[in-house]
Amino acid sequence: MHRSFLHLLIIWITFWPFSVSAEQPSRAAIATAHPLATQSGMEILEQGGNAFDAAVAITAVLAVVEPYSSGLGGGGLWLLHRATDGKQVMIDGRETAPGSASAMLYLEKNGEVKKELSLNGPLAAGIPGVPAGLVYLNEHYGRMMLAQNLAPAIRYAREGFQVTELYRKLAGFRLDVLRASKDAAAIFLHENEVPPSGHLIVQKDLANSLIRISEHGAPGFYIGELANRLIDDVRKNGGVWRSDDLAGYKIVERQPIITQYRDIRVISAPPPSSGGIVLGQALNILQNFNLERLDNITRKHVIIEAMRRAFRDRAAYLGDSDFIEIPVERLLDQDYSEGLAASIELDRSTSSEELGVFPVAEQTGTHTTHFSILDTEGNRVAATLSINLPFGSGFVPSGTGVLLNDEMDDFAIKPMQPNAYGLVGDEANRIEPRKRPLSSMTPTFLETGDHVAILGTSGGSRIISTVLLGVLDFADGNLPKSWVSIPRYHHQYLPDEVQFEQNGLTAIEQAGLRELGHTLSEKDRAYGNMQAILWWKKKNLVYAASDPRGEGEAVTSAIRPHR
Ligand code: GLY
Image (tube, rainbow, N blue to C red; front, side):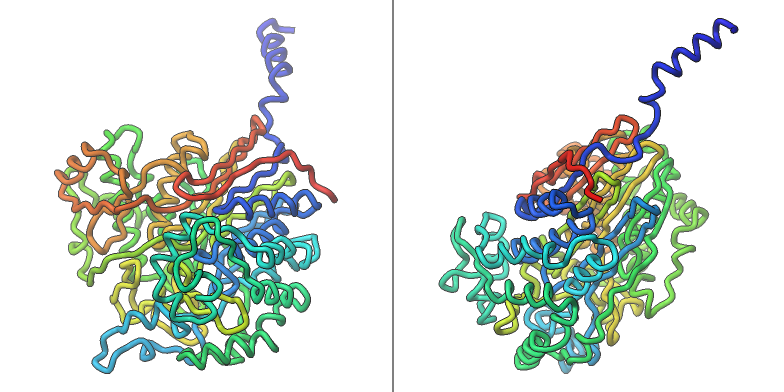
């Protein structure tokens, strides 16, 4: 045998086991915004559940222990990857507008929007999707009994969970709204004030509502005694829900938005979320630049300009695809992105006015939650759940324990009238009966030949830019600990300003961006709460990280699948 061939053969035999990607992860991983949710997910995996069972348990536990972020009265998007057949799908449990909803409900006689009606109290609430989502996930993808998956949530609702500093801050932000609802005040406040740290929040009514779902499935929530209670108290307090709104709620399976950024396949949320399209469009634009070669300030400038352009198209074209035609192919077309990239000048900012003139408003605070799961069979879940503003609408229908969302504010109530996040929208996102309001939730998978990543975050309109910065950090070869920690900045077309979290841009970066013509707006706090997992297939290593800005927990474990 030729000597050099023999040499090559020896090298190949020596290194062969290490050059083949693993078929299944060496460890399971869970990252969520609350330690009790992470531990409950692990508990379900230990009992023999798969990632989808763990997702049911975690969704339900977060509904109990993070009432300011998500809940049975809210909605969610669960992005799934099933290992056995590679199926990738988004389970759409987004809220829907009630059948009698119209923009008129939120307008004064003079035609002005009466903001508090779409933010506070039962008129602000869409028909919840989380209860149906729990049951659907369990039935179609899980392998455990629903009662087993809901058991940890029922336990924490009965026994209580401890108030944290984050809880106190967000309850303080929504204090007046919580006080206005008798049941919300009794459950979430202590003597009508923000409870002290360590105070136990016990939710007996919520435990009973969860038990009803575990015994009767979705009809336990959407039909019968619990549904009647929800409707009665919503209507008594100015809401418009009807029994056919609840009975008619449907989960929808949707094809994810798939784009390619260099060697990375990006799988993310389709409409009714804007997440996947805006993320994909921004990445398509950035593909036209060699970001590594740019100096730090020019790189940030280009990323900001890509965000501006992608968010402009969000305002113009996106809404619920069951109601409107969205030109998805054109928005994600490489030629179109090349044109947008060509309109970016490296030495000056584009004003958003050059792209069109619309009203401007301020945006508000933290809400929503995200969790990521990988099991040792290779099943994955990236799920983002919301009730919109912290503690949603602040309204709990009497005797139900179900805190309702204020997701009606995610519609463009009046075309080009900014919502609570300062986002504008057009006809595409106007209120129509049974329509889903446009979301920014961006649960995402990233895949290369050698890596699988699972990520997402809370953060209102800043969700998409936070995920974008995470994707770029992944592309730079960094690990989840870095994606969840890197400083954050954001542009959403309008208001025409670069928003950045406290310390998100250095003084030098701020000066450099100002010189290019950007208006900067520093927020008085950090934002976002990213939960991320990476499976490095070639080395079969699994990493998980929870955002240091939040109170979450990320763990990995060598739990093997039970079949
Ligand atoms: N409620 C916030 C969102 O869905 O984007």
